[in-house]
Length: 137
Image 1 (cartoon, helix red, strand yellow):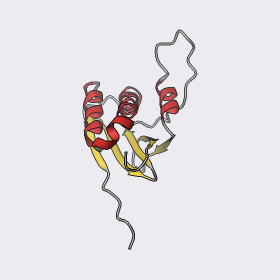
Image 2 (cartoon, rainbow, N blue to C red; image 1 turned 60 degrees about the horizontal axis):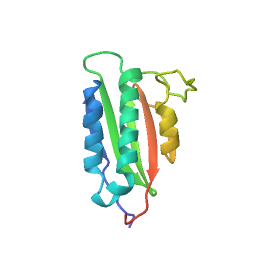
Image 3 (cartoon, rainbow, N blue to C red; image 1 turned 90 degrees about the vertical axis):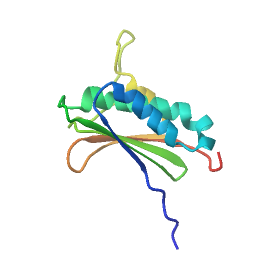
Image 4 (cartoon, helix red, strand yellow; image 1 turned 120 degrees about the horizontal axis):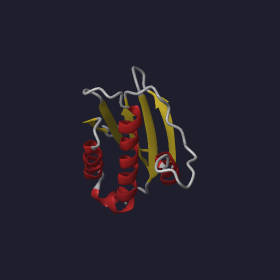
């Protein structure tokens, strides 16, 4: 009989800057206690960066815009998918030393074991990032 996977954690937040903190806390609270010392800080930083980018660049500016998060463990990783309604495809930037923005995905690229951008089937884009962990903490 196959092992039945865990149901992913799922959240929806308004595309508003106040949602970044709420998303970070929701993700941290759902991480098993034994993994919080190992993954908590990096997962919190990934959450903050991806949700901030989704709000700034992916939301269409409509009152009903939502940012969606899904988190699940699989294949020795904790995966985080952050989705927004925008049509754009996030890409690594190459900011110069005086730029005040454009470093979010550079940070994601350095923290995550793997990450990608995928279009959503109906509307929008998802950025998916994984952090590796060792079973048993």
